[in-house]
Amino acid sequence: MDTPSKNPMVANCVAYDAQGRRIDDITLDEISDVLAKPDTFVWVGLVEPDEALLQKMSEEFGLHELAVEDAHSAHQRPKIEAYGDSLFIVVQTAQLLGGNISFGETHIFLGPRYLLTVRHGASLSYAPARRSCESAPDHLAYGPSYGLYSVLDFIVDNFLPIVQEFKKELQELEQDIFAESYKRDTIKRLYDMQRELLNLKLAVAPLQDILSQLVRLHPNLIRDEVRPYFRDVHDHVTRVSDAIGSMREMLGAAMNVNLSLITVRQNEVVKRLAGWAALLAAPTLLASWYGMNFHNMPELDKPYAYPVVIAVTLIVCTALYIGLKRAKWL
Image 1 (cartoon, rainbow, N blue to C red):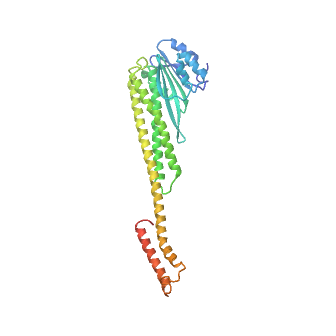
Image 2 (cartoon, rainbow, N blue to C red):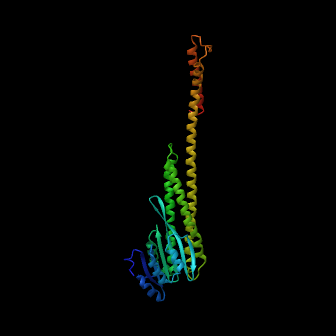
Image 3 (cartoon, rainbow, N blue to C red):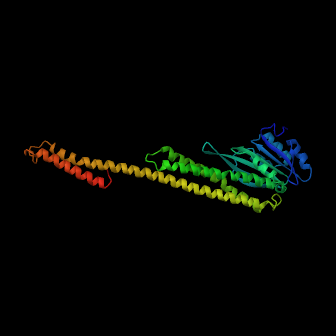
């Protein structure tokens, strides 16, 4: 098999001793040799592996065939499942790309002496999480479960900046929401943000149950010293979930305000049109009377009838204009 540096599907393959110290990068074929030695464990990271590579991992770590089958597909629901002395965990990841959220998946295999992560789709490299563990060998000495904590903490910490970025964008959109002119793109963007936050909520919510199990169960895989760290990640997930809920409420309120303002503006236009229609109705009515073909019209034979009608029309129109202006219909 290729070394991690030559195979693009292998992000890392590292062996560690019982003190949490990095032994060295190893090839995939050397995994079984390392595991044959006591007090060692292996951390492997894969990126969209093919079927042959997953089969190789199954042979090296003794993975369950159903878990391997799920790991080959990037359309799994977030979950945690136990297969003998190992755990299979599926979590969704998210990245903000071009103002929109792109989702991916990470499938994690945890055993007593190994940690295997399989990334699909939009996901940042877990190299920072691994470096953080290697900088604290006293903690990494707790074994693969501490590496699992570091990966999950890294995933959860990447959710909150997305919500904060949406909050900043909403503040910028408020100027368009309260602008005099209606912008279709504004309401469309608000709807898109609402939809994407719903998808983010569906990705975050199952993590609470997954972390709750890691805090309470699986004593053969999760050391007691690591459980407080999982509890801390659970608190972070709860905070992210609350932030998403608050953000969705703010977006919903912004959409309602935007639509209400549009309705108010439309009502103002209708009122002004109705006001001008009423103002024009008075001269139209008087003119229509004297436009009828009757011989005996009132004041028709009087020399000052025409100026009087014009004066009456102007007085009525002026009175209507003043009244409608005070009522703010004009």
